[in-house]
Length: 568
Image 1 (tube, rainbow, N blue to C red):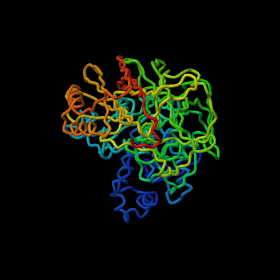
Image 2: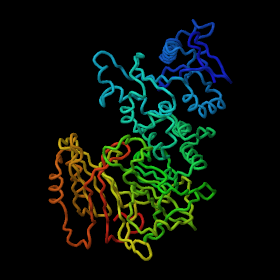
Image 3: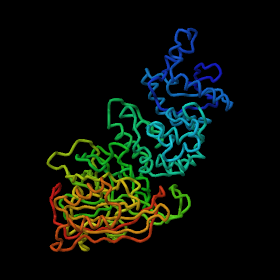
Image 4: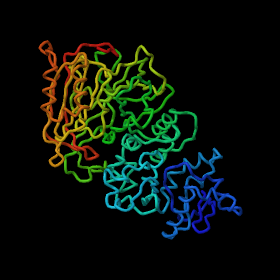
C-alpha cells in the first residue's frame, strides 16, 4: 500500500505495519494527477513540471495533506496518485482491497468540489434545495463504499471548509442517498441488511466504465473477484454469482424491471443495481428455516413454494424475503435491525417454463408481486425443485411479453401505495388460477400533478382494459388524510391519455377532478361480469425509509385467459 507523507509529500510504500492514515474521497475531474505525474511533480526536477502542480487534482492532494497534519496524521491515501494504473495486476489488487483501505483509515475526507458554502449559503447548505444535497459526489458508484466503510467521514466544500461529519448529517445523508440510517450510524451493521437493500443503495449511481458499477460493490458484499474490463454487463452477473456462493439471501432475486422496458432477458439475475431501486424495504429470512440454493451449469438450483396458474407454462414462486412495513412512530424506522415489525408481504415472482424443470424470469414492471396470507397454507408449503436460467441472451421476438406503453412517470420508492394484487380466483382443490393474465399486461403507473396544492398522489393499476385508479391526499402537516379509488375500463387508452394531458397542465389538483374526468370519459361497464374488487386499508404504515404507505388490495377477476404477450 502506497501512502503520501503529509510533511514531505513523497510517496512511501508499506507491506506490513501500516501507519495510521487519512484517506481522500472525491469525484474525478479533468485535471487529476496520476501516479507517474505526481512523482515528476514532487521529484528533483519539480520546477520543470510546474504545470502539473497547478492542476486542480494536485491541489486537492495537498489540501488533504494539510488537514491530515492538523489531525496529527503523518500519511494520506488518494486513489489518483497512490495506484499505478498502468499495471493491471496492481489495479485489480487495489480495487479488491479498496473497501478495507477505507475501513482501516483513521478518518475519511470527503471533498465535494462542486459545493460552495460561501457568504449567505452556510446556513442552508444541507437543505433539500441546498448545494450539499445536489453534489455530484452522491451520484457516483465508488463513493458509496467511501461513505459507508470508514470509521469517520468529514465533508468539505470546494475551499476545504468543513461541512460536517457523517454522524451529524446522518438524517440528511439518508434522505439524499436512500441508505438506511442504521448503516450510516453503525458501519458494523451493514452485513445485517438484505442483499436487495444494499443493492438499492447503489441504484441511481453511475460509473465511467460499465464494469465498475459491479467492482465498486465488492466490499459492500464482502466479495473478491478478478477484474475483466471489457465484459460489460457480465461483471454484474458475476458479482451476483459470487454473492450466491456465500449467501442464501433470496432477496437478490427480488428485483423489479423498470417501467418502460420493452425487451426481456432470460436471466434470473439483475443486469444492474437500478432494478433494485424500490427494494429498500425488502428484508430476508421471512421463513427462519434455511432455503439453500446454488449456481449450476444449468442455472440457479432452488427449492421454492410454487403456485401453478392456468396460463400454460407460467408459475408464481415465493422467495424467502418480504416487503416490510411498520407502524408510524416506531423508533429507528430506517434500520432493518429494529424488532418492532408490523407486517411483512412475501415476494413472489413470475417464471416461464423453457424446459424440463427449467424456468426463465419474466422481465416486466409487474413481474414481482406482494402477497400476504391470500392463499392456502398448502400452496405456500408445496416446495418444488427447479432451475432458474442465468444467461443474459434476449428472448426470441415472438415470445417477448408486451409492456403496454404508459404516459405516466415510473414508480418510485416514495410511492404512497403498496398494492397487493390477487390474480383471479384460486381453485382450492388444484391450487391453480381459474383465470389469469400475463404480467406483461399488468402495470402500476404513477401520476404526479405538476401543481398540486392539495398534495394528491395517484396511481393506476391496469390489467388489459381493466383499470383501478387509486388516489390519496397527502397533507404535509397531518400526513395521509384519506384514500379513494374508482374502477373503469379503458380499452383504447383514451382515459389514461386524457389524465396524462390534464396532469401535465396541472389541471388535476383535487381527487374530485380526477373522478369527474373519468366519469365523463369512461365507457359503459355494465357488461363486466365481475369488475376488479378493491379494498383500501385505513391505517397508514411506514416503510423502512419512513415513507408513509397505504396498503391496497386489488383483485382482478373474470379476466379472459389471454395468450402470453397479448396486447389485448
